[in-house]
Amino acid sequence: MKTSVIAWKALPVASLLAAGVSISSAGDIGGEITFYTHFSQFVDNGDWERWAGEFEDRYPGTDVEVLHVGNYRKEMPTRIASGDYGDVLNVLDNLPPSDYAEFYLPLNDMSLADTHTFVDRYTVDGNIYGYVYGANAEAIVYNKAAFERAGIESVPTTRSELFAACDRLKSEDIVPFQINMGAGWPMQQWDKAALLFADDGSYYDKALMDSAPYAEGKPYGESMRFVRELFEAGCTERDYTANNWDESKMLLGAGEAAMWFLANWSIPQTIVAGESLGVDNVSEDLGMFPLPVNDSGNPAVLLWPDWALGVSAKSDNPETAKAWIQFLLTETDVANASGFIPGDPRIAPEMPQLVELFAGEPRIIEASTPSSEFKQAMADARLDFMTGTYIRDLVLADDFDSAIDDINTRWSRALPQ
Image (tube, rainbow, N blue to C red; front, side):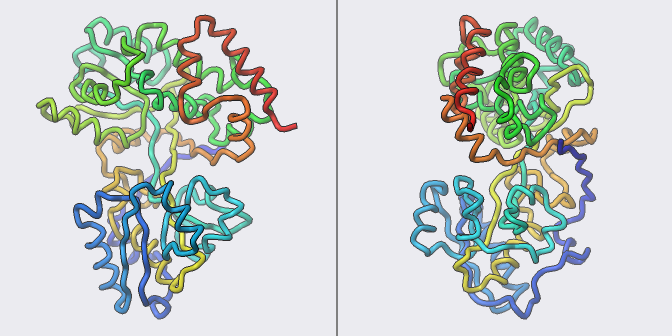
């Protein structure tokens, strides 16, 4: 079981180098590098140009060309296959880790190895191939004004308190807990919640040793029962057939809905949606707290990493490429500007909702990378992992127990022999 408590020292990003963060020898840093990014907003607002300029000032003789790629997962594999994929790029999440060494350079000599989170996720045979921008916290996003109208004075820390809060919210005609079943993809959250029920970020691969992981009392089974209970108790939105994702953001921002289980990335979208209705102080009304999956009173927060940066195996200036990665992740506010929990734990998250979430120093569960064997078993069992359709079908099943038995049977047949 991998759990921890993140304790930020909150060093200003500009002071991290002065605080002892080493970088490659300046004498080895020079020349032009090409950086392929998926972040279009930093192209539009000029941040990439500004950060590249600051890097070039720090290391005279360098030149950073920033190129935005719209559909990164689709376009970058083609570039990689051509052999022309620049110097710095994301570590593709659909590339088997066993292939990292063919396309990326090891980054073991960077000091980020000693400070960054999720380093293990990008380590193969002792070599590190990527460092994450940051992580998302999978937790409950809630509307404080809605809680206040329902007379809820503190956030729930137990499962019983959560369902009691839902009852209070229903009595005030506030949708307690949006699951967006009609949209479909948000139901993937209950694939993630299985790690919280297991209290183990490595649970997926351990499920390969269980012929019935969806049975009652098992982490996957309990996650499915949790969302099913929310639905049957009338805690969720009434319309569960239409894709009301855009409307759901407005409802949460306006306080007509109270909660959902999604990561911090959903908060900026909710703020924009609420403000589009003319609602004031939407940001101040939104907060976060850990999803209480049981009555222990000690709920955990699940961290799920975003993209990691790597250096191309074809790079002509690998030291400059490494310096650019280290500069971005330790000397700019790229992680906070993206709404992430910074990958360097010495940089405190700035989003107010994240500050609230971590103020009580909850336990942290870091999600490990699901293995190829696990993903294949899910596919062979006809379970669309991280897509949500099979979970939606379970929640809507006329006979939930029979539907669970069927999934366990399919899973058992799909396990590697």
